[in-house]
Length: 320
Image (cartoon, rainbow, N blue to C red; front, side, top):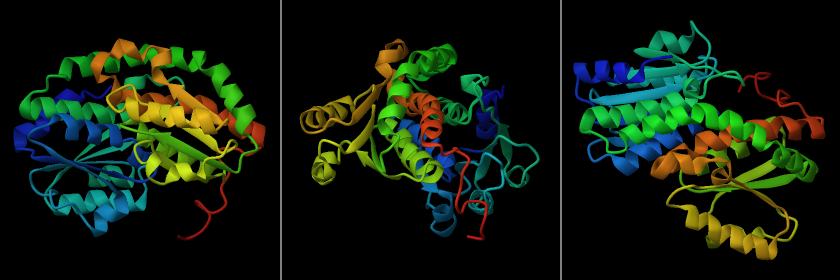
């Protein structure tokens, strides 16, 4: 396991860090929303940005300079836009950290520091991509200015090593029911707020659209009543990932409406699976939890639809 605390201490011993930027593509961008959210909610001294890689290259945040830390991710370490984003960050003087699963990659050649994360059911939770990303955030905040949540965050991270595997088993009946009830839907809306929003967004673009060819859109529950709720009828398919923190009231409002006008809503609530044990920092782990739980849902849906998660029409097949 990479010692992120030591890594951040080393970086901060060489220069003052005034900002942190997160960049990637698809799921390797979504994994950064929780750490971005965390920094923007708790830090007085650090600015933070969250930018898809190609936008980062062509319209780089002004905070990316000699006092910036830029964190990028690519599972195979070869996503062209992400490698270029890391290169651009270095050209501007930023210190760069790359997260990748594979070793000896193009990304590893560019960044200053590389973290190789684990994948699969046997991987320890805190060695996964999203966990390392969140560790970078709270270790940086604590090193730069001190973080009142620091020990709570560390304890919560450790707790999830056992809580998530247990939750995956407990959620199986719900996952089976979801697959049965949604297998024939041609449009599924995902919903969320706070950190959970990014898991809803990832499910929409990476799973439903990319891996299942199901039309989808993500709706922030705070925006639901400002336009999107007009598409609701009793059969509209919704999947809502419920916040365990301050924005939970936004989700409850949307759920109450849908319970009156819709009969095709699935709500996943981390509080049903022991998240109260994380205390008042639980919300910063929402996306990590929901992405792990949807890892149980998605293969079941794919099986019933006879559409493997690996099936593609265009990706990796054409020059684009």
